[in-house]
Length: 446
Image (cartoon, rainbow, N blue to C red; front, side):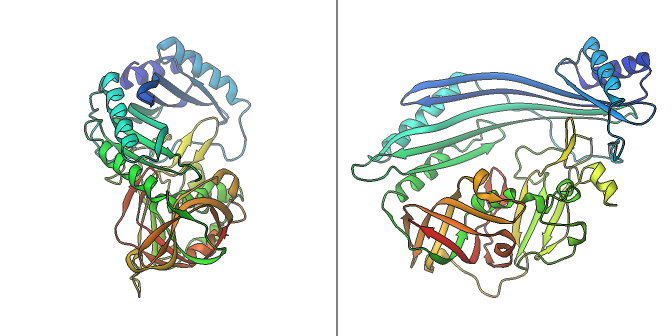
């Protein structure tokens, strides 16, 4: 791929030749190697190099056209600029996207040094060894049907005709393991874990393996649970998956489209227990896949969403910020349309709790580890959910796996019913979060 400076120079030359005065270009390249194994043998070895470039052009009437390409040599850029210019005459007339007012603002100083990619043979060897150890950890564990070890190099850039130019590069490696048991006369049980790091060398494969084994074994001796109202503790991953399912609460585009549980007037209102605070923090030090700018070139930053239970912020692109008289927050996803998306949630305690709770002495408490079927069990515009889950019934600190159950409720009521937010955070794929205690949720057993 040509350098960002070459692309910028070529784009300016081709735009001038075509009489185009206003344009911007956003692009990314992902170079990825990944492996999967099955019972001691390679199942899949995959290498890919994916490029995507979005070109936007504004005409003399200030309507915009957009096209995508994977070809950023001079002839490819010229064709993309010409196509986008022709499309601009069919663009929307209202709320036309524009350059971000922060496209040239300083961005965070992040290292662009990529980690050297390990040979695919090393990936396979590491994953085969992990599978072997997992299968030998307990007689009931008969397979690891879902697994994967991958390493990625990502390059991103943004430039526009006003002279803004940005680029960044990063690397990361990830592993997931998901095991399954078989015991005569018993239902199959499973458990899984995920780890991510900046390189294969730093990846905590042993930690992922250990967590998978512990979770799987903990589900072997399962019992039915009685239906009723329970005090529920959400694992960090479970709480963040639920928060993500109702992210329309903070999404300014959803709010403007009236597809949200919030309205513009919701800012400053109490929507949760004062014990809860939430930020979206793309630059969090634990965010391995951190991005320093969004698809419009706006710098990313820490955005406070809930502070001590009060709704304090929305996620914006430049268009939603302009319509709501706010500042862009660096959450633009650029494509045929400019949408808004979250980066990396950071959940932490808000106001001091009057009472602290611990699983070590909890009684009749449900610990939810993993929520399932979020695509089907969440009604995001109504605020309701009914979801199967993996978890345990906690009695006097003893965990007993639950055979099969669903948790149901209203998300806004759940936020108000938070009893305790633990202090110790955990890193998950979606962010950093501690365990969250909620009172009075409906659990339906078999």
